[in-house]
Image (spheres, rainbow, N blue to C red):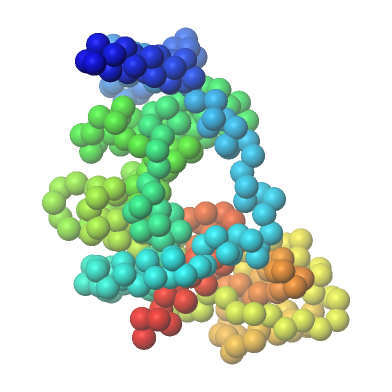
Length: 324
């Protein structure tokens, strides 16, 4: 029986290894030289790491065909703004209320936004990713020319991060694009925005709830979140002059008086000095229009999709309403 089990383990391991072969280390040779020269890494240690690093064809497939790029808003919304995530957010808020309140007081970011982000990114820690980060980033850095420069930079940050936090780079797991922990920070964001919110000398975004919550709040704060300011509100449209704004993107740059001249009025009273943009989203009943403000744009610095930002806002509002 033991011999059979060992044989079976060898067979399935061999199958897995065949499906995910070791990367061609020659592709990493220049990168290894750079890390040795610029950051003082030991060349032999890096060669050992990359000799255990695997090419993942499924990662190339996933990043080449992201579902979000073709999904209409009403379908996207139904994935994230649904009962299970609302209920999960309420439970998360209740469990970590003191830390969430401290983060809001420290960074000025509303609790409901912090909770919604963690809910969207990892379902409150239930799904932080199944891929080894070293495999993800190496596959994309050396086998995905379209974004090789970006992912080489992230691979560099990841190895520096692993050294700074004293963790084995072959053990960390994350998304297919290398995002890590409950807030799904990429390596550069982890290094720049993660905080040691409980003062234990480490920044652990997988298991330390203080660090996780504080880091999300710090991220938004450093991207110029405006405490107490609105995020977005539905737009009332008249005429067709509003269409001139639809190609201008979602970065707020117009006064509300300019929007009014084009037949756009917010459904709720807003600060007349606020900068705004017009966003069109596809609902199941046709297009819907939103006046989006600077805090909406800040959410898009976490994920550049305006649908993501709207989902985070709406999920947060649903959770907040149930907490009152």
